[in-house]
Image (cartoon, rainbow, N blue to C red):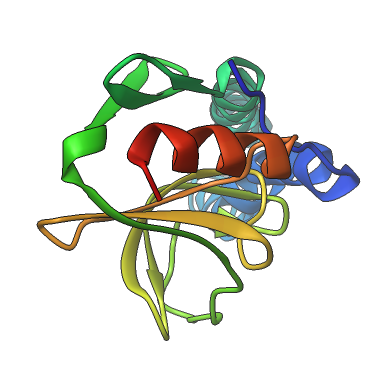
Length: 168
């Protein structure tokens, strides 16, 4: 069982979700206050947005805390939150450590955290379960050209173990 590398960026990003999620709604709250002219309405909206931001942040923290990369006898299992991805060894055609190119279109990537399908300029869509969004990402590609990006804490041991199981 391999845990992900966690950096200061990872810790900051998980809480940054709350800020990123809440800021756009400030305009809505101000507009609602001006339209209704009542303080309780503004406080209610602010409270709802704060709770929503906290829920998203707690979810992100949960994903990072449960993130694991497990090498079983016949597959790589990626666990993160409630998500489990199984990549059979027979389907893996390439494994390498890469630096991915930033793309502005991506929506599930922050400094220190990339989850789900993320768009990269040079790699296309990569299913990420990684605490490193751009640099030193272990890229696992399957025969059907699906790419997975992960960031094991002990990258050298993980790569050695995986390559020995794959016969590379």
